[in-house]
Length: 319
Image 1: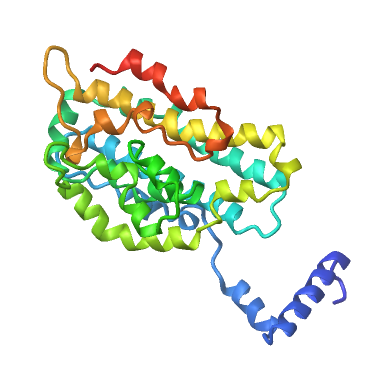
Image 2: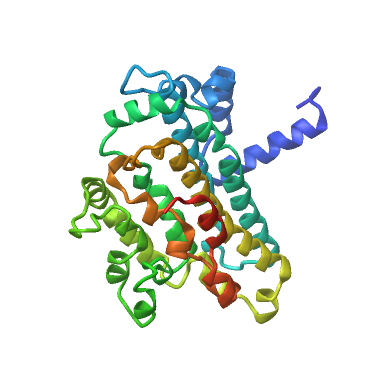
């Protein structure tokens, strides 16, 4: 390799050894690099495909904002699950690694909550109330990734509806716990107990996936990974605060920004509240003080759990 810089020659030698150990020929790979086209930004992130995915169902301009923001949300949810998987799959979970991943999750949810003004203030109410009728029975309620975030975070008994949660503290099957998760009541007729089409569609498509994930994560959710730490690590102030912040970000703040949107678009002045898309019971479903869902219950005292999100709801929700 005369005339080649020593550091380049060393890298070539390392590559040759790497491919020899894998039974491959370095020359073939070098040919591939020689003939390959230069990578561009737009090809790398599939920009043309990405920008082709916004397909409004109506002619109202603000529907493009609505669909674009929901797609952005789902991309952030994917990043959150990416961080969660690293926590639950870690065989030797260090406190520093744990804190870093939780802080990333918190950061993603903070971005989502802070950017929700795009939904609250970025659309005309008159347009929204019209184009939403073309979306029935689809609903943000049907975000499977958000439900996966919950399943990764905590055992299903912590997601059982508040009214019956205490009776599910004993040994129950994953299937029985899942049948009583809090969000199912959010798409159920309160008078008849009949499931809405929105919920029936959602269950048909995702129930088997949710149950497989819940069974795979049994005794291994983020909450249980925390419980499995040594007493010293569990007492780490920064870790406990990170987990509490995540709990608040997901189970209080994320719900509150949705209530803010519902306040603007579904409750007008001097008129009856419009039903949520898909027939979900948003007044009973969204307020955090009604569900009192916490991923990490042992990190909150009884007074904090009793008043979970209560002050905001008392101030903002019209009864």
